[in-house]
Image (cartoon, rainbow over the protein chains, first blue to last red):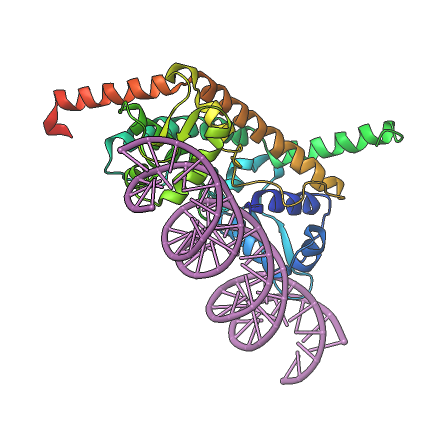
Length: 149
Length: 149
DNA sequence: TAATTCGTAACATATATTGTTACATGAAAA
DNA sequence: TTTTCATGTAACAATATATGTTACGAATTA
């Protein structure tokens, strides 16, 4: 299947927004993400509903943050996107009648659950401010050794 | 999209095989898994190539283990299946030209990588013998309190 | 020789993600 | 007030992947 890239895409968009002090239109963001303005609106809709960003119409409109960057975690964003399915692998049946299958699903399910919990803990700790700082550090590091880039 | 259920399915099949001392045909396994014999063969092919199971043709043929159950880990099986894509979420582009996107992908990618490592470590520790023991314990526990099942 | 069983290619079906078009709604500028 | 700009959203198309199904060949045993 195609992988769900909304989390990466929306973070990419938000980081571009963080680099600017004015609202960015869906068209501008679409160019950054190499996609379509409708896709941008569709993806950002969840963040708007969650109070992470705000959208404005008409002249001078577009997307901007509704909260400080250090008050927005990756977990907030993951949730605002509707908690997309994390794992591509999983059981064929949720409620199997076969006891053997139930036992197998329990073992696999617990392992996946723990891995997911670990990932979510990490998402909770990381804010957009951290992400922006990471980016600026990477840019500085690259400028210091332009030949290795 | 549909989730990949081959790992759960093949473990389900292997546990049924573990409960029997004769080879099981693809058709028998297909009935257990509520699917088709061709699907079973397709899935088991990787395990056969990895030396986990062996297949025999003709009368009395079918699938059986090629190694002791305590010498087969979930990791072995996951690998034999071709290491299916683990996460449904991921970056849109593998080699982005945009520095912002690269930075975002690095953060997400590292978190996913660590979660995957944790899961694989767990798969490495768990053998089919463990799985069979889990199942037998579950059956015993259920028999001890039939009213709560 | 006949029955059985795996091996595999080819095609069909179902579902999820992403892209695209079209049009309505709201807001600011002329 | 009219025009322009921008979001909101429905509807449909394109693409990708997993799984199901049919068909037939190859190998093994009775």
